[in-house]
Amino acid sequence: MVLMGVLLLMEGMIAALLHWPPPMKPLLRVLSSYYTEHDRRIVQALPDCAQYDGVVAYVLRPGSCQFSNYDFETAVDVNSLGLRDDEASIDRPGVVMLGDSFTMGWGVNQSDSFPSIYERVCQTKTLNAGISSYGTVRSLHLLRRINIEALTTLFIQYSDNDYDENRLYFERGNKLQVMSESDFHDMQSQHVSSLTYYPGKHVAQFIPFLARKSSKRVSRYFMSSGTDTHEVTLLSQESKAAFYFLNAMANVFDFPKRTRIVVFRINGRGEFNGSVQHP
Image (tube, rainbow, N blue to C red; front, side, top):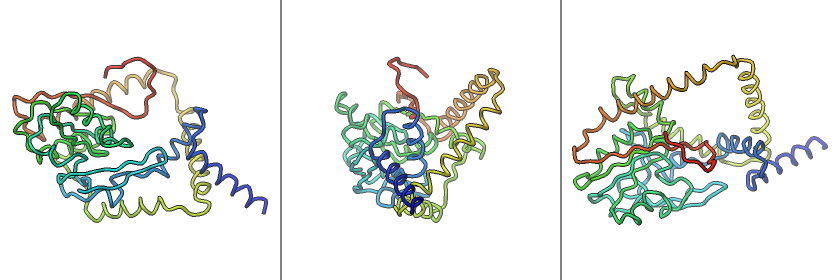
C-alpha cells in the first residue's frame, strides 16, 4: 500500500509539473526533454491534421484541425495545397516562405506566424509554405506545386534538423525517397496510441527515461578527451551542412533568374541572451 501511494504521488507530481513547469532550469530541462520524447503531440502525426503524399511523405490536411499541447491550443486552417494559409494566397503570391514548423507556426495562431506578420507589414501577398519537419529537399519539391508567375522573393528557413534529409538526397544520387503510405499510417497510429493516458503512465515512462539520460551523461563524461576536437568536428559539420543545402538548391528546383532568394537559419534549442548571432 505504501509503494502504491508513493507511485500515485509521483504520477501526480509529474503530471502537475508538466502542466505547470517550475522555474528551476535543471528540472525544467529534464521535463522539457521528457515532454518532447514522450508526451508531445506532433502535427504531422495526427490524422486530423496531416495526410500522406507520395512525393513529400505528407502535407497538411485541407480544412481545419485543432492542434494543441500543454502550452498552446491553436486552429490550423489549411488550403487545397496542404499549406497553412488561405486559398487566396495560392493565387500568384509575390512572396513564398519555405521551411519547417518554425515557418508553419508551431504553437501560434495563424495570424501570428511570421509569414502572416510579414504579409501584413509589407502589404505583399505571401504564401506560408512551411510544413513541420520538412528539410530543404522536400520544401523545394513542394515549391514545384506553387504558381510562381508573380514570385519576386523566396524565403528559405533552414534548421539543423534539415541536415539528414539533405544528406540522404545527395547520397542517393539526388533522389528523394519517402516512407510508404502504410508506414505513414502506422506512424500516425503509433503516435495517437502513445498519447493515450492510462494510470501510472508517467511513472512507467519517466523512470526509464531518467535512467537513459543518466547513462548517456556518464558515457559523455568518460569519453570526453579534454581536447578541442569538438570545435574541429563542428566546423566540419557546418561545411557539410552547407554543401548538402547548396546541392539541394542546385538540383531540386530551377529558380527563375528574377527571383531574390533569402536564406535564414532558425534552431529551437538555443536560449536568447540579448545579443544577435549571425549564422
